[in-house]
Length: 111
Image (cartoon, rainbow, N blue to C red; front, side):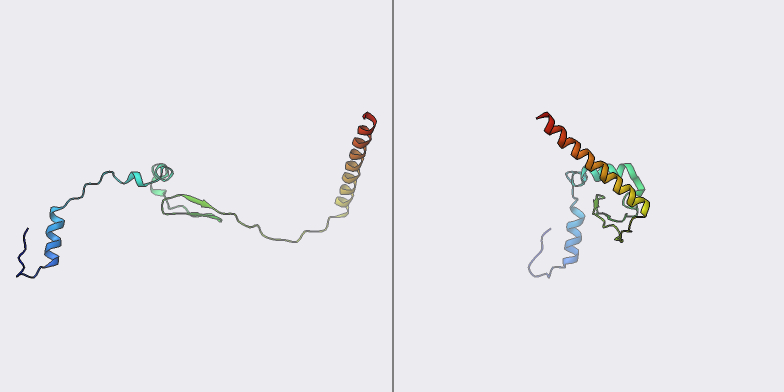
């Protein structure tokens, strides 16, 4: 493929000649560039790979890896406890205080 200086080169024909004679031979099928997690998911999910809807707080990148993010819960005001619950809390507090005083008295008696 020789070109003389007197002929203006037609770059399209040169490119076509070069691409016709050149055949790339990849070293690998490209599987080395795919992470192991994505490769196993592609085999496992088949046609469903990257087709699933994203959940709230998660995204899927182009390799099929899931990125999870924290989702803030909805904020709400606490309700004041009912009288029955208030009595239960008072009884639990009394039981806890009795237990702590009993532990302190026991440690004083033993030592």
